[in-house]
Length: 428
Image (tube, rainbow, N blue to C red; front, side, top):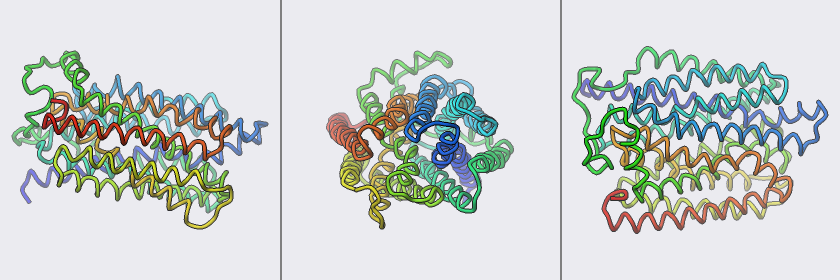
């Protein structure tokens, strides 16, 4: 392996561990929600009221995350991806610890909003660092590997936290664990991660000649020279809509799977936390399969993978609507895993490889931030709205709505395929 290859491997390892640790500071609330709800019920709330109030906290957090993606993610194009990436991780640690100090909903809400706001800088920062270290010819492979980070981090965090719950620990130790893991990884990144390969004495990487800036001599620091080309690109807008649809479904499962397993099937809190890891675990397999298939089929093949994945997702969701309260056996977990497999591979394309193809080195962070930001505007519904739907219509009603959203995403993926076949590049 060449010296550059060794440095690139180190960068991938640091970014992978760093973004995986972000998810320790995010999955902790989902895993802890049944226990926090019980604590709120001891304070006088009904079960449904506690669920709705916690759902509101989730929605406020997703709103902060979406706004951060839109307005903070692009800062990586101004002050560097490393600053975004490490700044977000540092803030996540601080707000995770603040959450444990809260004894009621006001502090919980403030801490979770702060946590999600600072975390919004992380992925765009990661994408920006990638654009400074890797040629566009390897975007799909590199970002595909790094997309596994949030799935592996989520799955490992849920499994570990589920084990702790089974040992009798309360919800606060789970947050302490998240802060410790993220702190160790943050220290390693502070010492070893560099902004670009140029800073290590290597030549700059090749950028995709078909990115939306290839004919512009854009002036650094002028955000309008980045935003206008992106927002006037039809392919980019289609991808933003796909991000909105897929994020609604993803955030619903990320947030509510443990609560669903406890309330609908009667599993223990520890078992539900551990079993919820099937969603990101099968999603990790999906990322590998989708990445391989997308590379084999070429750029216009990604919409095909998106279409197939969203059809699988819709089918899995329709089957979930047919389950009855108290159903035991492997079927509920198999169907949750099927949804994760269908959804998360295609989802990983949108704010990763596709964002870099649109934005290149100049606007990669902004492109990723906008795609993710629009997605998480839709993801706001996964908190308060899903809680209210579950109370009013039952979980079957929730999954029926998510199936309709997935079907809309499948249809839109077909439109994207037609457009790309006509133009031979994203939106050109």
